[in-house]
Length: 318
Image (tube, rainbow, N blue to C red; front, side, top):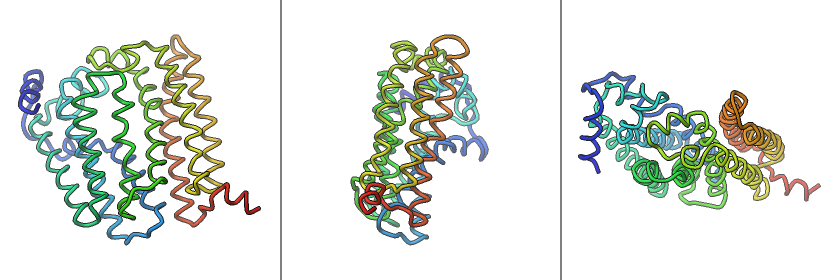
């Protein structure tokens, strides 16, 4: 895996050892890291066991470093693909700022270090989940599925859905139904989010030889799958209200934002040609980010300010 891949990648790229701090920071995929840390924070805050602030910060730092390690290892292995895609050609390895060996070493050290530190400082359940997330993203998604099947992001999306479970486990030392529901929400959100991007960047993926759904099954089938997954996501996002994880505010916001998610997904499904189709895909992609952030932010606010009275429980009380 490693030597052959590195040699193959170096053979197709002009690389120069070194690079500055900004190049190493780019390896961490900061925007992805932010979403990972944010959802992990939500899992930590909504957990029923309060956590010491110092340990909470330590846990989030470890999770952030682990997420960055996954990004660096992804850029190491995918350097040849990144070089052929306009969206990723400016990443540190394909542009020659860092060598594949440097990205590999950086990601490996961060990954191992983050897991060990989380285990020693917090607990080994959270550390085990973090290790699983890194390994799944690198070995299952990046190395195996991404170049093999159009279901790559469906299965591989599990890695990006685990952070709330890590946050919950950091606070409680366990995995629960509540944390699994948060996992499922992100897991079901991932396909419509990334397939909307794939519709926009389908020529990039085709040129790079990545079997994303629009490349293998066409844009119309991709739009149909986006609508299906969106219809599954929206009611799933209401489950926290049923199990007492989300309160009245969450129920209201999740319902409203979910309705708009379905509207955007339907517009993406309906618009099939030209600029209107591209605009609909871009709108869905942008809104999907806002949707996930708002849904988890409301959970954070409710639990942070003690507003998390289950919506159904409140109804029954009244």
